[in-house]
Image (cartoon, rainbow, N blue to C red; front, side, top):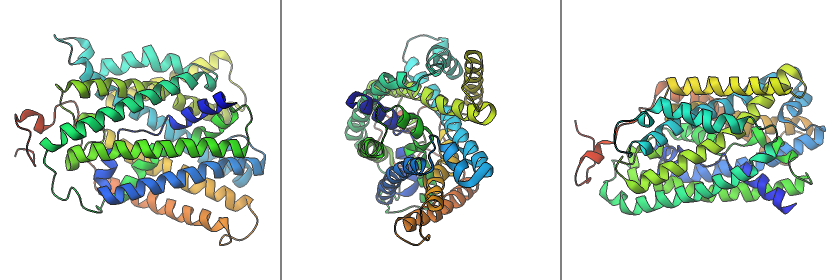
Length: 409
């Protein structure tokens, strides 16, 4: 039981560390960003347990069936779209990150070669790793892969902290780098929601427990989210304090190409992202199976649908490469409703008492907060699209002393 619980914790934890967390602090301001990060983590922890509790109350064993039993077929269609959209866009972002990070790793190999070409790297990682891993039918087989990803995550964190101490002092902070709050804080909540969400695969992981119970699930959730919060906060602070206002949507785009330690970190990060991709593919495949087939897929259907999902994600990531905008859109459009709104709405419908009584009041507040984040986040993303740097070294890498505060004009 302990071993299965550990594997479940690793799989639940797997999606948490995202390259956009330092970028979120850049959007919100360091102090407010940390407060928002803690708040999103607490809400995530609460709503994950709330989700399984709702499943137990309604006698359902999937997010889709829970919402269908609560809000009927329209609710089923809405949550199915969101459950598909979030992991699908996440897989696109993982491919973008893999292309960015691994390309810079291979660029360190002397001579001109195809491994230094972003599109080839994405195709190679897809065919060699993500597609074969995504073809597994049993999610429990990803437990060891999840543990490897956690080890790589800790390695990445150490690299980012070391560079914060050694590289950070050479790059002077930008104007208002330490401001308490910035105007794009709502967009930052979307990015953080994208980093912490695991609701779309919670029922899958809950079902993998040898003794699935609300008590066991709560323990797994608290350990996973608590660990993720500590690691994510350290990662975000170390990354942001190194580059302040220059922080990109993918933090490893900030490090110079000739930085050997950063190159090692890029390799670990790229491989970690590759091992995360299959878990999201499991979810998208299950959503399609529930919506269009309402039964277990045959072997041929399993292979065809998995290949189609991976192929479409890969095609989009080959055509688009600005990670920050992808993170903001996915956070506001799909992650926030799945964390804040839908679990709370289900509990309000299933629980006795009025909306303002007891625990129902918390659910009501989460729904209102979620709607505010979705509407404001999407509006600000559309009105204030963020620039991104892709492929080329940042301007401070060209300066011998690297003691600069603004890009050359």
